[in-house]
Image (cartoon, rainbow, N blue to C red; front, side, top):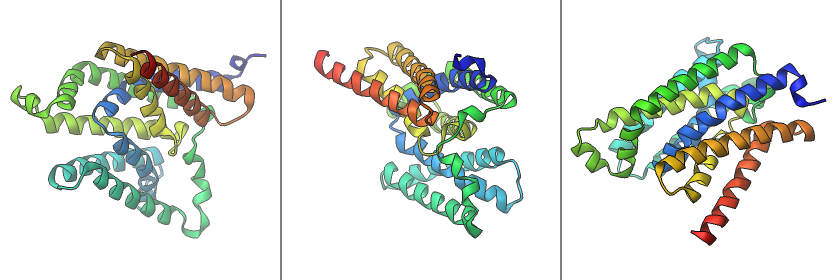
Length: 266
């Protein structure tokens, strides 16, 4: 009996086929713009988003996470432009503070166990309606990527040159930050707070080890993300372990292999 005999595994596979290339596309720009800390901070902010939603009586946790993440992302960008300290320092301060606030609120009365599943995620619990939400987010990301990828690449390579070409840097930076925030929050329930950043970064980092140009970079990032996602789902099913961490382990193995290969032959 194969794993595709079960409806929940079919839905999980479909979710992986949507989430993986989504992460592959975004991951390339996150790595190019050195935003690994930024995406990690967004993942941690999910708990704070839930907590803020509870305070204001919002029952839809995904909605409260998305709204808070968008505000959080824009706030990080705004402060990073005005403060002399390094971006990593600013993001670390905000990330740790936000996470602490979320944990304090959610752990009140010993109720944090209700949200602990968010830490590692559970793609096997995804529903058909949630698959539709992921599909919509994939479509929006694809349109954004087609329209804005060249401008974002120019900004990541040389802001001064991008400014001379009349590219509105703040607009594209904020738009990309909002997109990353939305994708992270829509996916985090099934991917997990602790590992979502690894799934964003590892495929793109592996692609960077071997790519000779931008086309190869994007292609390999999506390919590695898809392979890691599908292989992780299959391996986790037959070994009866958590899917998300299994995907990350496979992605990490691919990164190590490409790193060693690139170091030896390029």
